[in-house]
Image (tube, rainbow, N blue to C red; front, side):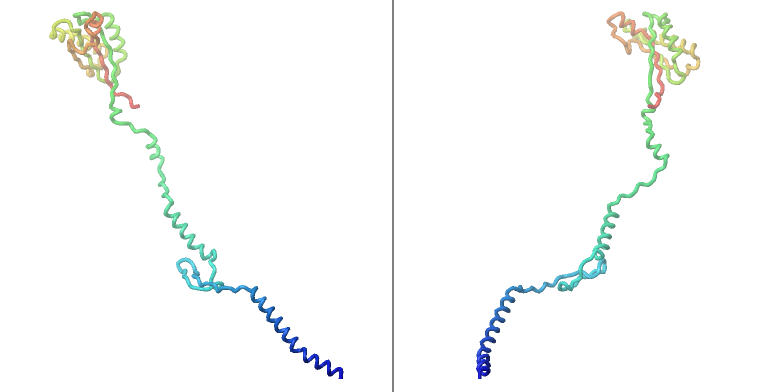
Length: 232
């Protein structure tokens, strides 16, 4: 009789236990669901397939999209760098011969500079109204005769002061120049063809004629040698 009573009591409490277990299970499942965030679906994107001139682009969804590797980027980048290097590299100068370098290093001589002449002048004094050589004039002529170069043009110019008529002074100037020319030709016969005689009275004064010293300086014969200067 007691066994029957216990069995009946257990059967009566079984629905209540089952109900409690179901409620507990539902509450636990709701809690777990709240802690799991929703995962969004990845957006489709464009991906490169192949590389270089054969490269193409397709639409895919990660993680199925192909990844870009160094092999994908390498050939295109190397071609660009090579093209830039070819465009920017300056051309190498052509080899030059030793003769060309020597010609550039040697300065060229200007023809105008080479044609420049140098001059040297001596003055032979004369006494008033005379065309004869004095002691001073002879001493200078001996020095000039020794120094005259073998090459060059020699000009012998007779001069006077401003005293007296111009025609007489012209004749006196010419006589003085002839005296000096004859002395040079006698001492250096090889120079005869290089000598030119000029004469003018009351011309080309070397000093003012307002003092005896100035007039003495004007009574003279000038010997001028002109020759081509050596190139610099």
